Length: 203
Image (cartoon, rainbow, N blue to C red; front, side, top):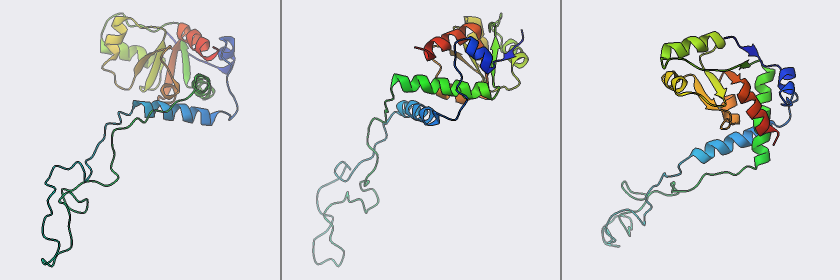
């Protein structure tokens, strides 16, 4: 099996209009920031002076001790006291429109095509669920181990053989986003995956 570089002309023939100018960079940034923000759990939490476990009694008398006035043991200025302006559970989610996500996907794919980083193959599958077979196939198709392989679907043998190869990732065309396309040195696309990406971009 051999891979050919996906050119702008070949992409256009597959119904993908490649963006050749510097426009829409901000769109890609917005989409990637939203993707990463939506993955944040937002569960970080600290205790304030109101929630620190402790007595509400004054630690010493207001006057006569020679020490500064103190009203409670959970004061943020003391070791073991509350935290001022610390994090609390919240949502970091950001919303971007479908049009923005679609345009960001098209722009990211266009940038990789213009750089010559996208290879097209008829299909991608491994007959036996063996890591060495997957590595051999990947080495024959891509000069870089950090490669994103995009297909319409992958059989069980291919998935099993790829799971121990950390630099390479299998991805379904229906799930690929702009962050995926920018996060790998090379991209391998199957013919059916290219058609599905074109359908997503042109909706």
